[in-house]
Image (cartoon, rainbow, N blue to C red; front, side, top):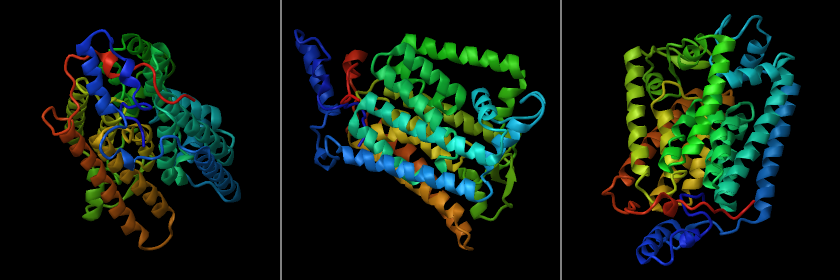
Amino acid sequence: MAVAGERGGGVLAGSSDPNTSSSAAAADTVAAVMTHATQGSSLRLLVRVPTIVFLVLVAIRLAILGHTIAEVTGKPVTDVYVLRIEQIASSPGTPYRDFPVEYMFPENLAMQLIGGSGAEATAIRLVFIAFVADLAAAAAVWWGWGRRPAAVYLVLGVPLLSFLYQRFDLVSVALATWGVALVERRDDVGGGIALGSAVMLKLWPLAVAPVLLVRRRWRALAAAAAVCLVVGLAWLLAAGPKGPVQVLSFRGARGWSAESIEGNLLWLASHGTLILEQGAMRIGAAPAWAKALLFAGLLGYEVVVWRRAGGEARDPAGGACLAAVTAVLVFSPLISEQYAAWLLPWAAVAFEGDRAERKVAGIAATAIVLTGLLGLFYLMPFGWAALAQRWTILARNVALVLLLIVWFRASAPNAAGSAVVADIGVDARFPSGGGEGV
């Protein structure tokens, strides 16, 4: 299902000097790990996904788009995120300076542009933005890794469509995916600009930014840093120093998100009452020391992921990016259902990898499906829906933690089947060409 370094079958054959026997042998070794000629490859999807599959998957999205528009025009808009956009866009004064905003500066600007003329109009504009961003992310996967991974991305996203088209997260997913895909295709400046833009839109793409270090793409890293610097300075000039603090503190929220690991356990144990705090259902109180421990754990896991990724034959856009982004969820005091969208492109790429990559991709797919089920439970008016929500969140969170454990063990240098390559240049491990074309 999605690429972990194999990019269309056998593309590594020309990555090393054919006149150097040792280089050729090294490339053959890498190709054996990263191509379809592996045990169990018969279980993969068809090499070339039929066009009708893409048409059906796009048709599903068009149906969701139409249904969402019908919902917001046929009854009052109650979505918390849409109402928050309206509140921000219609509030007098300067965001961050005169009233707190929990969103990054570019997202706040987007809210100002699409909001302010009524919740219904805002919801309609948002659904079109999300729809275009969804297809743009699929196009990025196709461009960077091939036709089949793009189909897998579209399939994995289906369970999330009941709520994802009323969120802005797919825009950051599209930008981050294009950033890594462009770097994959040797457009370092374009890739760096896209990835830097994704980071400034939503902080989570910082987790995949180390792929630039792993591949030693210094121009891309410089471009990404330049974008972050320019946007950061514009933010500081427009809003003052309060903005970053408000974003990092979730507008001063104190409780654990009900979907976080800690909040879900408190909810299951009936320790506290759920309350709507700063746009999310929260429970209990998250002390500063606990948040500090979570942040330290996140940094530690990210360092391990990317240090190991630098010595592997696997494409880091697969399992490494998937584990890095999953760690952001596991170690955060806030998880919302739309965050599952962050996993989509990297899971799609990981499905194309070796056995370990496909295993973590399968776990990610399970977490995505459970999140989609959770979204449906949120819409149900039945009395048992609240209990179903709690246990579905628990199952989803267990899957996320399991993914981190499985990847940690699979990527260990001495792990059975680990794809560690010594004395092979970065260009030999990660070819510049690839995919099946657009």
